[in-house]
Length: 288
Image (cartoon, rainbow, N blue to C red; front, side, top):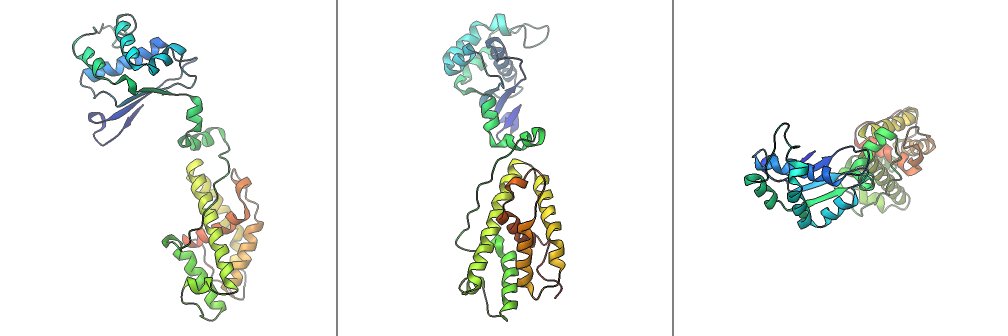
């Protein structure tokens, strides 16, 4: 597996991930041959020497190969001394590759300190593996980090915050010119702060599980919330603020299904209503 570092691809820096499914630990001979093949083809101009060479070995490496990786000069010496027996006839079918000329130059020019490895524990701990583990094995992604509410209202909050401002203004006959006016109100100030907390709780929930499960999982969860509050949104209410409060109560009582159900805490379900407002999927305006 190749990791290109730029649009120059093999003409620029690149990382080589040596990934094979071995029945046991990766042995010294296999490790030497893997490095030899890459350096040989680099010497033939197929690509530059890799910036790094990473063995991906789910069952680990044998002790001797580990020692060589930890002693780069010894790794180079071992590759050179074992070339004829372990590499020369195994790089290209029906061809013996002598250790000379550009092949030897490629070995001498390569920084063997760039050879490393990852084992199965590192693979499983890597956050990038979480979505795949979830998809293949249904691995529990764990609880999400709680959302943090910034002091100032952010640009991405404006849609749902303006919708709430409209609801408060309808109740108070246009008393508020901005969000701060609501924050300063003796009755509605705390209410608006709670709505922001709900929004950011749902924000943290969605970001975490979008990264650690799949976009489809989050989409299905949102769909469940939207259908769960649909009738409440359509019901007659005395004003928009009454509809907001009724919807928050309904959202709190929803029992979502699916893999994220155990982490669907009340603020998450309520906060998702504001995200649905933000995305234009629902509105607080309705029958009166």
